[in-house]
Image (cartoon, rainbow, N blue to C red; front, side):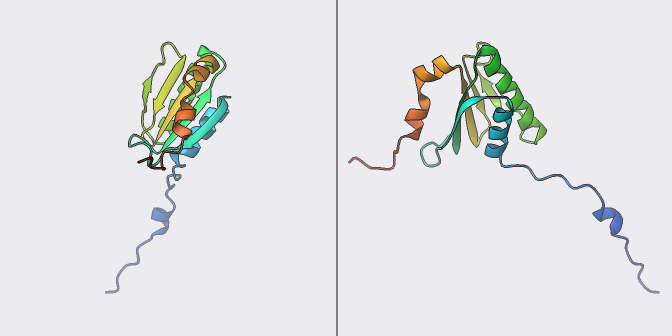
Length: 130
């Protein structure tokens, strides 16, 4: 008795899950879609044990900062990255979205100027002064 061939066409025809975009690319696209302003992505690999990238961006008002954060969280969830940790949403002067490999800081312009965190994280820490 000859073996019966297995029909693999039905297995191969199943829809395949779309590959996840890299989280940094997804974040940058989501905040751009939300009309965030003055976005800066900083590679902090080796400078911080908390994350690989820091994104700093601005919204025009508390409401805009909140909307950017909401849209970012929605994009992360829809693309399989789960729910990130969020701080500062009630006041929305400075909202931090922790997506593990990327931490996003969304500021009102005045608050961003006051703290100026991108200057600190963009500094070159590799030179040893000893």
